[in-house]
Amino acid sequence: MKAEKFAEIIGEDFFTGVPDSQLKALCDYLYDRYGTDPKHHVIAANEGNCAALAAGYHLATGKIPVVYMQNSGEGNIINPLASLLNEKVYSIPVIFVIGWRGEPGVRDEPQHIYQGEVTLKLLDVMGVKSFVLSEDTDEQALRTAAAEFSGELDKGKCVAYVVRKNALTYDKNVVYKNNFEMSREEAIKHIASATQQDPIVSTTGKASRELFEIRATAGQSHKFDFLTVGSMGHASSIALGIALNKPSVKVWCIDGDGSMLMHMGSLAVIGSIKPDNLVHIVINNGAHETVGGMPTALGKADVTAIALSCGYEHIYSAESYSELDEALKKAKAQSGLVFIEIKCAVGSRKDLGRPTTTAIENKMNFKDYLKEL
Image (cartoon, rainbow, N blue to C red; front, side, top):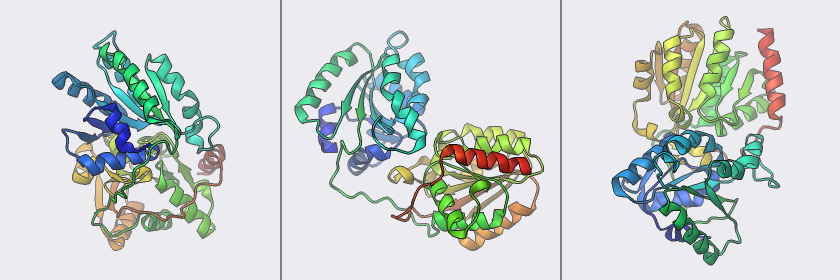
């Protein structure tokens, strides 16, 4: 089904969400039509942020908001869904559009498997009626579901459209870009070279995929790296936990702007503790590139000022490889909590692969390596 037809049948004109590759057609349509006009479309920090923003929209307008997200974000909406939106509390109706990664019977990456198994169950437990949109869903079936959902929404309840792979399409090619020149993959090569055999925690998405391929191409061991393939926004907290318990080891975190934004409170926690052996690197291309390239709010923010205000001690920003190499050299040698922003272009290799080891293998190899340090 065309994304624009789907939006037309839903019939609302305010959308907020966190981009998802399964919903790329819808995301492209929304960006093409509305851009980031906050009256109609807000790309939020995380799914709970979306739910709260949607509640404010409804309180102010009386209209129904639409929240889009990947099913991995269901966990982030459970609290506002149960304690804010639920009909036993404020009874605020919201339409959720959820990309179904890890659907049973559909091959997917390990971080999506369990989440895919419980996607519909979680909605059912939370009292949210759902409709599964497939490639073969016709317009009449969707209109029938929308009519049934209208009755639920009139009662102050929430509903959800769960979108299967390839269920939505959009014909226009929407291009996302910025004005920076460094590539993320090349920047990670410089990081891997500078860190030598120090442990690295890398964030979810293409950064971890690129780090894995960089090690493989160089004939290096993967034991140095913990690839945070899921749990977006938590790589820096994982790195903090390691740094606190391996105080004599330099620990590096390769983060992204979307990941940093999703749980930005972790920076305040890290900055308050100030582990002197942690280097927090944020590769900032101002985009949710792994799931399509839609912009993040950090593309307009002063990321280094955020780190400074949170208590990071040594702060660098790099727009060139020479600046990056200098920052990495200083971070490797000095003591104290370090923050490095790397400003990169949007884009990656079309033939970029995925880790060939399992998540459990990655964990065990990394744990065994940490024991040696």
